[in-house]
Length: 124
Length: 104
Image (cartoon, rainbow over all chains, first blue to last red; front, side, top):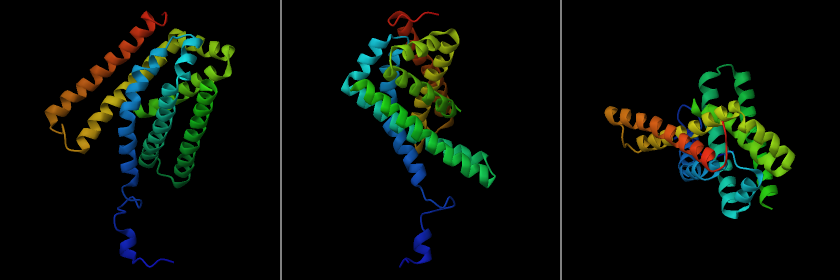
């Protein structure tokens, strides 16, 4: 039960029925990912071809472990938002659309949990 | 497009971190795949995709606040994003070959 008028409830929601929240979150995560992705490319990716000890020592450093965790979280969140738009734009049947949207979120949670678990194991 | 490619990239990142956490024999399996020429090609595609997505994303954020939206400027920054991202990817691999002992 709400005391809002129907007009007040729909104001700002627009044709997508969810307002500008999705658009805004996509931009905020993009902004957060600028420094994180620069760190990832210029710092973490210099480990390409590195042996195990070098890579493990790098991620055992608290600054690197935290940066990697933040990068993983921000990137996966940004990814689910982006993939959701692709699904909404190109999958028109309601059933597959909902199934893919759910799968999109499950995928990010599984990959994220795996990455964070691994990071804790490496850094601990 | 590069965003969708980077979805696959997250799997590579997860595999790398899990292999690192799981122990030497698991890291050897990852390392052998990554060092294989096909693995290197996939990794190069990942690095280039990410670099391009980063630089092109900065263009998009600038457009959102009304900067650089003129066609001739947008064209120039577009070419710059492609060229710089390729240079960045080449630099990452140059470092891997020169310092980390990666070989073709």
